[in-house]
Length: 336
Image 1 (cartoon, rainbow, N blue to C red):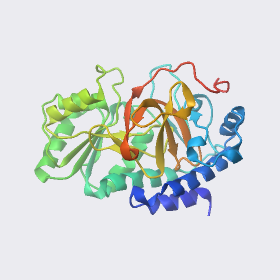
Image 2 (cartoon, rainbow, N blue to C red):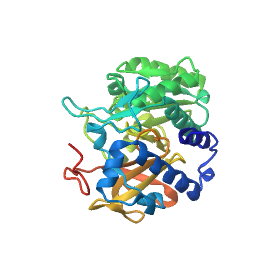
Image 3 (cartoon, helix red, strand yellow):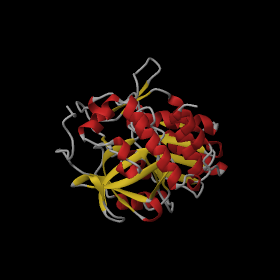
C-alpha cells in the first residue's frame, strides 16, 4: 500500500479527533516529511538550505515549514506534473502573482474534504447547500468551488446550488426552504453575505451560515467580531460558522461559533514566533500560523502561512488576520 493510500484509509476510518492520538499523528507526519524530502525537489532544496539533519527530527514540531510564498513561483509537487494533475489557483487582484497548487491525484482532496465535512456536520445529504461565491465563480481554478460543487452534488437536494450575483433568486430559494423547514448550509464570501443580510431577509434555526472570508475591496474591512455580530443581528440567527482553508491545502478547519476553529484530525496548526519562524509561542499568544496537512501528501504538508493566529485550549485556535512580513525571516534565498 502506498503512503497516500494508507493516509486515505486512516482518514476514511476517522470517527472523531480521538481516533488520532498524538503518537499516530507524529508517526504519520515524520513519514510524510521523509517522503516529501525525497520526492519534492523544491522542499528538498529548502530543507537542505537550512542545514537541517532530517534523521534528527523525531517530532512534527521540528519539521521545517515551507513559506507559502513558494507556491507563487515554484511547482510545489512531488515527482512531476502530469497530464492528470489538477492545478488550483488562488484569487488575487489584477497583476498580482497568484499561488498555484498542483494535485497529482484529486481523490485525496475529495477524501479529505468529504470526511472533514462529515465529521463536523454529518452527511451532506442531510442538507440543502447554497454557495454564494461570486468572486470564486468568476475565475478558474478555485479549490473552494471544486469542494462545494462536490458537496452540492452529494446533498442531492434540488435547490442546492451556486449563486453569483443573483441575490433575488437566492432570497426566493431561502423562503422556499424556510417553508420546507429544511436544514440548510449557506456558505458565502464575506461581502456577499453582507449584501444578502442588507436585503432584510430573516433566517430560522434550520440555517447554518458559514463565511469563508474575503471583502475583495468591495466593502469596508470589519473585525471578525463586528462582522459576525452584524450578520447575526441582520439575519436573526444566533451564531456564524466559518471555514478555514486555502488554495495550498487540501484540508479544512471549521468554526461553529465565536471564531474558534478546530482542525480535521489529520491537520494541525502550530503558532510560530513572528520574529523567529523556527520557534513557537505559548498558548493564547499571537503569532504566525503554521499548518500541517497530511492529506497534502503529493505537494507539501508543512506550510508556513501569512496568517496571524492564536492557540486556545484543547488544540482550538483563532485566526486574527494577516501580517505584512515582506522581509522573510529565515531562509528566503530561493524565493525569486
